[in-house]
Length: 314
Image (cartoon, rainbow, N blue to C red):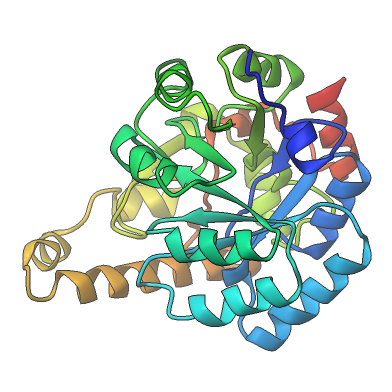
């Protein structure tokens, strides 16, 4: 068990974050999460414009309860400066950083009394992030939905706890019921980040087809693909995914290996992949590419966020 407690760090009833999910997480889900004693988190990239993002922050600020914003901190996110400025202005309680160097975010957030948790998926990156004095590291394991790590919770969490004894560790991936929460806490995490099981919630904004896919498919139907963003991402193995395959094609491999155009190729692949996810999430299309993790095995029906949280805490 950890000497830290996410409940105390965020002043919430249960040590659970509703993970920030691209296209899925929204204000309604985050408010309901807060009402249930956990903390929701929304990716800033879920908002097309800064005006939309700031409107969401204004709405979340009204509830006067902990919530978070996820920021992509690598060069692919050309909106980062604007998004971070808005987070600072609205004094977002905590920020989760992903995919890049979080130094600037940590420095500015701490100056303004805000917390920063850093996604990490291997020990090398964890060491770099830990040296920047974050408020916690989020261990993205191989059981996480969407962009996942390579290490199991049993490998990764204890190793992080031993190596960085003064940094709280939050586990991400493999949680769909209370027994899983207890398991991650016993491994040494101070709390858990839970995403996929909330896709099929009443408050989720995605299409009924996406929600039903989370109900009708299971763990055996989750596959890793590099075709969406150039890095491993878990998706439901629909007929369309089977038809296009899960590995980069010949041209994509060539572009990603060319040192002169690799950076731009990755940005194009990422943008194209995210656009496919967006189309599939909100409209009827045969090109069904739905991100999810293996925990959809325990999703048996579409439920309110409140009922899903009850399965995690009771």
